[in-house]
Length: 414
Image (cartoon, rainbow, N blue to C red; front, top):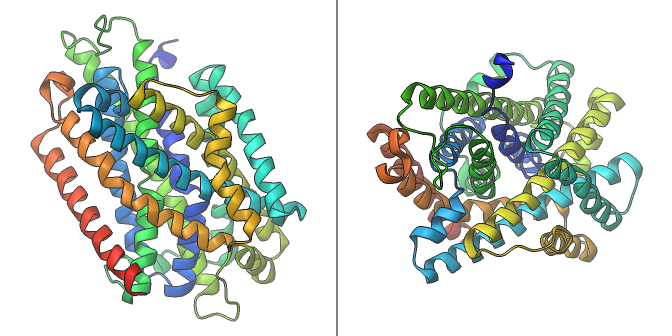
């Protein structure tokens, strides 16, 4: 029992981490590796470090306040700002679901030959099965999502071995370079696919759920009592461990995707620019087992991440405007754009990459309030940011804003 009590804050980061290896990551990482070799590996590393910082701040906010980011925005911002933040958060959630449903539909097509539209409908339906675990308790839902993350990691670890990747294959891509405007667009997609705005809301909410079940919290606030600093520090260490382990594993999966793509497809005999061609390339170069592992990892990513995305939509609406929709209606609303894209025949891989660019534009609207709240002593108590943490978060936000401006200019001129 002592061991179980010692892990009370472990779990939420694994639900957040699945969004860092969703089908959008598959598309951007494999295209980056195939087109530019390992040159953009440093972007994956930096984006994962940024994501780790952001998710740590999100979890710390839920731990300190017992509320999620959307709820705090509604409490502390004027009405027009709250509505504006809510609208853009909903658009980001739809862009997220676009990537996840499309990725799952492609996986079902690769595995069973199903039409993409049929696969998209099945992914939408299957996501309800995973969401049902959330109604049975936070631990069950987080465990299922962690199991999906494990499937992805095992699949790409096996691909690394089959492809003959060596540690030296990682080294050249860790020096910052950007190979032209095309590389900049892919780099922006990697950032958007890694620093996922919607899971900032989810992570703070899942952590909040853990907090409100703890004995000894302040009544009506949800904050762990500051009169027990030892307990507060112990819980914060658990949160830090949760975030670093979960996001570290997601980062390794992203690096593996890009390096495997660079090893197999860059300047090689097989050109890949779609998820289907990547799957075929695995089959040609490494055999049917590798192709199957890729398709299963893609399916696990699509199903798990779309469930987290639906949960994000519920958290966003309830937090910002105090309203909620039935899960079925919410699922249909967020899945509709993806089903339309599949029905009209838009190239799935390109739709995935462009959806990740949309996500990168939503990042500042999450980071600014997150930094503001986590540096507020009246909210955070003993868990308030240090000056170094706030400076690092502000620098990250500034870099992302500049990157978005450059991306917009690049898109308009291409």
